[in-house]
Length: 243
Image (cartoon, rainbow, N blue to C red; front, top):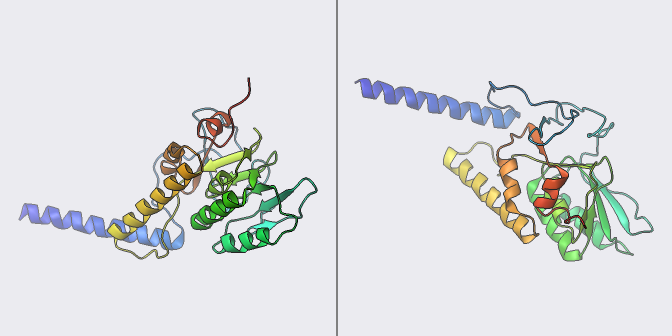
């Protein structure tokens, strides 16, 4: 009888926890955290102290490293410069990969370098557009003060060459995978594992060390791990500095 009561208690706890997870996923909530909050995104970053709060859907911090004004809700293309660069900025929304890919294909003359400024967004679209960028032979870059967070680094990785100034900001964190939020736990876990596997395979395909994912996997969705310039070199985003 004691064992049965214990098992019933475990089952009730699991059901309650599952309900909280589903509710949190549906409403953009997270389970309570009992550790100290991460510092603000605008706090200086030092080696070993690189995790910052990041909730662009609820607050616009303004100022560096975030833009003072909100970025577009979906990717937009700026005018093509005479040197062949074009700015690509905004959230990566579902459907942006085919839309932006088609716009780039129709440009004459074709751009040489895509300059990114994005808070992230749809992982699937970032991967698809990154592959299109690599197939077309475009380079990717960032301007000083620009950001490339969440799914944006996967688009950045698609460039045949990448130029990231030291005062640009590149960051990674956990992602959501799958279309539906109301799923059995084992199905949700399968979606997450499949999605992470796809991302790691993509990074390897683009010449990026998939070990960068260890920072993403240990950083919650409402925080961001900011990669230092030496880490961008270590993982293959930036070239080795010349002696």
